Image (cartoon, rainbow, N blue to C red; front, side, top):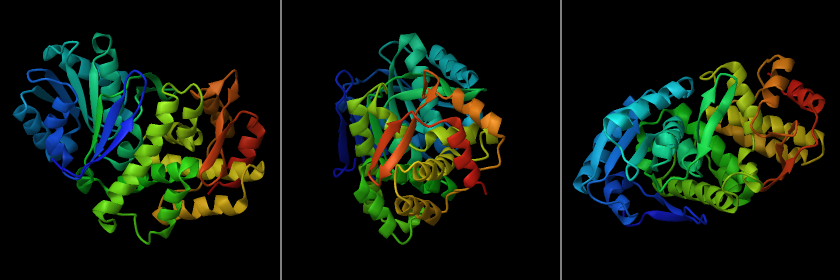
Amino acid sequence: MNKEARRISVPLEKNPYEIIIGNGSLKGIGEELTKAGFTSGQKVLVVSNPEVAEAYGKICMQSLEKHGFAAKLLEIKAGEKYKTPQSIQKIHDAAFENKLERGSLMIALGGGVVGDMTGFAAATWLRGIAVVQIPTTLLAMVDAAIGGKTGVNHPCGKNLIGAFHQPKLVLIDPYTLNTLPEREFRAGIAEVIKYGVIGDPQLFERLELLSNFTKLDELEVQELEEIIERSAATKAKVVASDETEKGNRAILNYGHTFGHVVETLCGYGTWIHGEAVAIGMIAVGELAVQVNSWSRSEADRQAKLIKKVGLPFNWPNLNPQEVIETLRTDKKVQNGKIRLIMPKKIGEVEIVEEINYEQLLKCLDSIKG
């Protein structure tokens, strides 16, 4: 176990937990579960996808077995098109076959899709059993694995079926990023940029000063761990203040409202999540300029950084009416009004409901590729 692992507290009133960040920390998952109160003999279902399981499944299972856990590994297909109730049934079937009890545990070993589905399966098995998140993509490390949002997609929209179910522990091992494709790594940087815009201007400036960070091997381990730590700490702080998104937690959706439109209408898989969020940040940034929420210079800084990473930034050619209909089904619509997270300056955003559909479409038309 990495003795110098970074630890971040998520101080929720009822379900506090730790985020542990350390290169090589996956080898210590059994030890960390014991520290978290789990005991030898407890049944554990590890859910992963084939690529991640092949690379890291053995390390995880050996650590669990070393500490006396009765662990089984289930491999499922990952990717947005597999994020369905049918996939949840496969996890539930495995839970039944392996006789998981209320004191049992599910572990998500994989990216955001595996984490979301495993979390939802845990939330709904026997009315809720424990889940631990071990994210293996940058996007999941800084975003999806933290905060307890779980769910699957509905044909009419992303993550429309879900539940809040906080993990008992989040273990982040940057070593697992070594097998992550470059495109997925860049997509994760989109979420890191988001944290800079919504609450950490120093992180944003730090990214601006980095000469190369579009590939994992361009970053030193310490630099990578610090980027992950700052991002995770920002999310932990927001989640702790508003666990079930009744207020300020909505700022974490910066770029996501438009991003979900892109994912839904372009078809899941055309753009991966972080890429869609990058397009969404460009879109809402331009809208903010048009309604005088923030300055052109700040919007240009955001756009320059997104382009520097090699992320997409042009709005796709979508049917305007379909865009409006998709926006109307978004989870963040309240009383028929769409809630947008609008930037005021780098490091500060606000929740706005006064934007109308005409303004939205005018903005999106101005940034089409």
